[in-house]
Image (cartoon, rainbow, N blue to C red):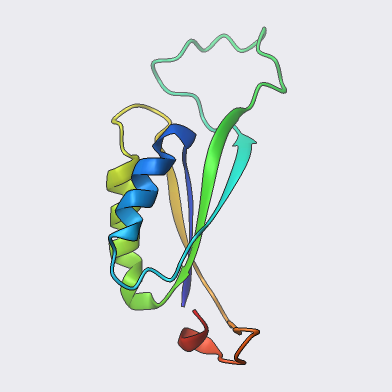
Length: 113
């Protein structure tokens, strides 16, 4: 089992959601609106002295728990749908999941996803 964590531009969330819904066996997803910052693009002005330290960018965080066989399809789908070709399109991380339990049925492992 894996956890996919994707940080994308919020204005791309609809496109990413529509694309993910087309993936067969998508177990579901959670979305959280978050704020943060990353490295500046090479083309941006590098004079940071006047920047407001609380000036964060609003982004969407997508979390998906899935079986190992779905990971590549989901990551590729997110990457294609979120891509604009501009700096700041986002990042996707894949993490291992040790254990899962579906509370309503008591199912564990891949069946719980």
